Length: 409
Image 1 (cartoon, rainbow, N blue to C red):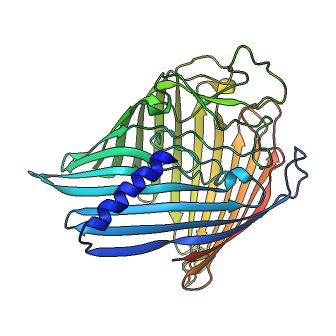
Image 2: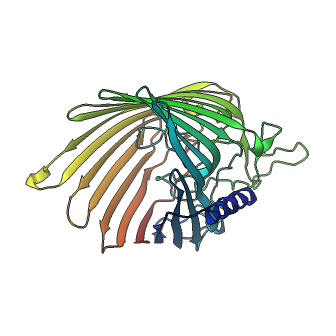
Image 3: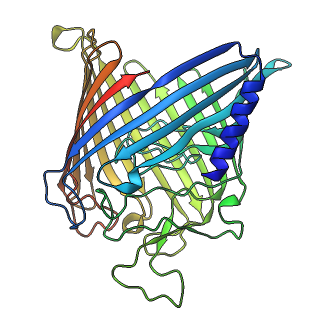
């Protein structure tokens, strides 16, 4: 937190010293509630939770080609103290200009970056750390300190990232839902002697060639996905109540993502090769993983102005039962009905099924604008079946019904 606050203060001071040309306030305030109908797996857990998320966005245009963006997030949760926290999602300075026939852009500070084309899980997306306290499916991100240089031209877009600080993944506490059988320690261990200050590097090239959008990425540094140690110290006994300690290895990852747009289909794919990480058994194992998907939108369904989008994806991890994530050999299908009415009403239904185990999950969502600045979101995530042999899956009793009201700033 000290690094983030110091960097935010630096950006605010720089912005304050410049003659601002524009100032914008955006963002929202979200009021949330969840109800878990199943009895909890652990006595400390609760069946109901309420919360509040405040996420304002501040933008200054300090000069013709220089601007500052700051997006803090404040979250309160009534059930899990770990979910009550403050974080900087964004706090960066943006400068840009021309370089002969090309353009350049430099971002310095804390930012969020997205890579990938899949809906369920983006294998190639490795810059930011996940905030697993946020939502079990939306997979929100923590802000990442970085220097991000982009050069673009007719030949494509080349991006270089210097990442000087590693953010540890957040996990639910003892009283939180969607937790594993053991609690996970707030402390973390690292393979690098520099620990969280190991400088990581990432590169990406992307281009659009006719109907094909393609991206090539490389990452060298500290993994965003931790392995877990039961008792990292040899003099400490490993008891059944001992928390798991996250351990972050030094990895190398090469990835590709592509989307082919035709009429009426979208074809999507992502693939990675990762070296240096541990599998579920705690052994180092190089591996490949990929996903492929199809998407199609049907207009004017049922003789109305509504659109129906159908999507299907297959996610595969060559480590099989030793994979550390829940999507080792899974099918995912989803439908999105957009009514295209004045209230921007959307209905979403999705189903995920494991082809190796008997694990099945369903998600339902209803979203609608209530007024000019108010929106509502109803959602349900239902764990229909959980195979006890699926060691990477921890949602046995955490089906829930949630509601969110958002007020735009």
